Length: 316
Image 1 (cartoon, one colour):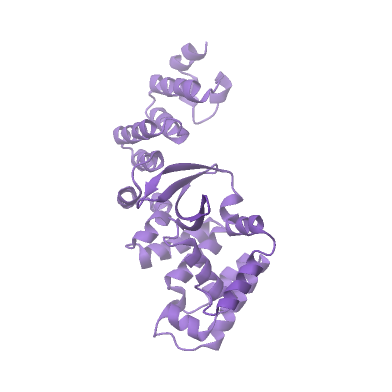
Image 2 (cartoon, helix red, strand yellow):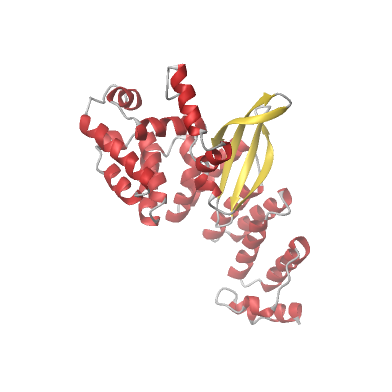
């Protein structure tokens, strides 16, 4: 619907996208997520009938998704997804990206960038080339070409989000650069908040990070991951009492949320509170079935704990 007005064109596009099967289409649509090891957790329904799902990535970090459902015969099917990192429905994101990178035109760009945009064949040609390079896997050249566009075009939110996507596939330097632009241009917008949490954490803006989590919790509701984010911000600012409080709240909300326990361990290690370290590690044994040996702690991070009486008595 975003791409075409003509019904036959819509049907043709659908046939083409599904020509290799629905499973293949879904895998391509979610390749950025499905290429990573993750677990998914249902949290609650919102707005009456929209399931809220949290993705926990093994490499660190989270994503939240609101599902839009429709009844088909005797089942419900997901017809759209609202990921918090984009702040818009997936259908809209895919539609916009496809339009801009597959068939850019002056009329489309005028709708996207507003009346200030003037027909410009060079910009249309560059965007077409960026799309070609991205599809061929030449991400670096696609990103560099995107940077050569005028700021009036690059500063549009759609283009900023696309630059962030490309930058995340290249390296931390490029990714941080684009997050800096997002914060400068759209930091006050709700939809940018979730993507900026890691950025605020990296630059040490813990108050901004906390306020962003507050807004997210107001919208999404309380859960262990958001509580643990707060705990880590407090930990980084050496506010150990609040860090322990937030981590404990995360465990109270979800006993099997492992990150909260590790946050407690880190805080206790920082303060050389070795009895607390032992207590939390014993919780790992009870809740997760872990089995620890002394050699697990023979490293720089646990150095003083490794030499402590508390560890010796525990593992004797």
